Picture 1 (tube, one colour):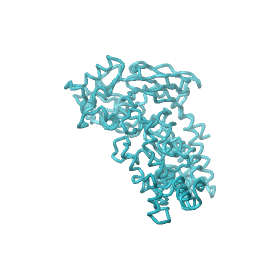
Picture 2 (tube, rainbow, N blue to C red; picture 1 turned 30 degrees about the horizontal axis):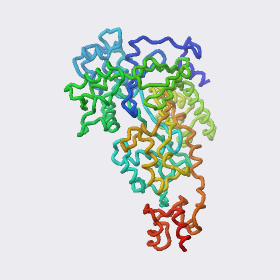
Picture 3 (tube, rainbow, N blue to C red; picture 1 turned 90 degrees about the vertical axis):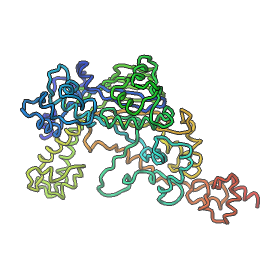
Picture 4 (tube, rainbow, N blue to C red; picture 1 turned 30 degrees about the vertical axis):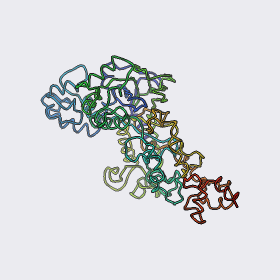
Length: 553
C-alpha cells in the first residue's frame, strides 16, 4: 500500500513510457546549459550540456534551503523577488551575476519573458549555479587497480603529470605503502585506507573515487580551479614564469572561433593571464553542444543527442541509440549515455520497508534505537527519523524520511566518469601478478614512453587513459550508489603468487617475495658476492646472473 502511495507522490503524466517529450525552446536551453572542460591531450575541449529534467531546466529544482532563503527575501510574500527586494539578495559566487545595480543583476538572472522580478525557479537556478549543487562530476573505478590512485601517489610535485625523475624515484616514493616489508607493492597495499574488502561486521561503505580529466565551469571557484588545472596540464603553452597561457593552447580549426579567443587577450601579447582566462572561461568557445533529457516525476525514456558540432577535433561520431552516443576527441574515445534512475526511488523505499520487518525482532510494529541501527542506512539518524520523539519508530515515519531524503538526492544531476582504458598500475605490472616489483618500477620509464603523446618526457592523466564512459543521471539513493562489482573485483586480490621456478635452487629459495629477482635485503651470502653477481649494477640479481655463479664454480 505504501509503495502505491509512493508512486502517487512521484506524480502522474499523460505521456506513455518510451514517448519522447517535446523539445524546450531556445531560451530554456540557454538557462539549462552546464559547461565542462575536458583536459584533452592536445588542448582544452569545451562541452556544453543542455540538461532538462522533466519539463524544466535542471537548475530550477528547489531544496528546503532554497525555499527558506527565497521566502526570507520575498518580504511581501507574493512569490516573487522584485527590484526593491533584489537589493537584499547577497552575492553567491558568480562575479558576472553578483555585480551591478539591482536592475542590472535582475536582467542577467531572469528567464524570458522578462518581467523585472525573480520567480522561485529563477532564484533556484542562480543559487545552484553559484554553489555548484545541481551538477556533479564523479569518477568511479571499473577495476580494483584503478582505485589505488597510483598516478597521484607518484606525482610528487602535484603538477598533474609524472616526470621521468618521478618514475625513477617510484620505489622510494611508494616505500611507505609496503606494509609487509617484502619490497613489492600489491593492490591491497596501494588501495586507499578504509577500502579493505575483507573487513567483517557492519562498516560504513567508503566511496572509491578516481581522478578524471573533466572539470565543471559553473561558478567562480570552479573556474579558478579549472585555470589551475590548465596550467598543470598545458605547461608547454605557459610562459617562463608560468603566469600566462598562449592563446594557441585553445587551438581551433575555425578561424572565427580562434579570433574570439584572441579577443580576450587584452594586451595583445599572444598570452592569456589568469584574469583574462577567468573572463574567457565564463563564456568560452564551445566545441560541442549536447542535449540531455532525464525523467524525474514524469514517465519517458531518457534522451541524449548531439545539438551542434563546432570543432574539427571530434571524429567517429556514432549515435548508438536515443540515449547513447560515441565520439572521439583527440583520439580519446568517449561513450556517453543518459540513464534513468527513477525506478530506484520506489526500490529504495521498498527495500527498507522489508528490512524494517526483518529487524523488528519483537514484532511490536516499531523499532527502538538498537533495532534501527541494524537497518544500516547511511546518513540517517534515529532521532531525526522518529518524528514524534516517542522512541518508537514506525514504518510510516521511516518511509516519510526515506522519501524526503531520496527527493533531495534527485535534485542533482550526476555525471559519472568510468575509465575503461589501462590504468598506470596495469601498464607497469608486466607479469600480471597484481604486484609492482622493484624491477617493474625500474623499467617504468620505458614502459610509459609509448603513452607520452606529446613527447615531453612526462605522463599526464589524459595521455594515460584513452577510453571513458560517461553516464548522466539523477542522483541515486545511497543504497544504489556503490557498484557491487567492487567486491567481486577484490576477490582476485588474494591469489597466491607462485614460487620462482627459474634460476638455481639457492636463487629460488632466497627469492622470498617471489618477484623473480633477489634484492640485497634477500641475499644471504656475503654482500661482496652480491656486487660481483650484479653485473649490470641495477641492485637486483636476475636468474641469468645467478646462473653465472653456477657456471663459474
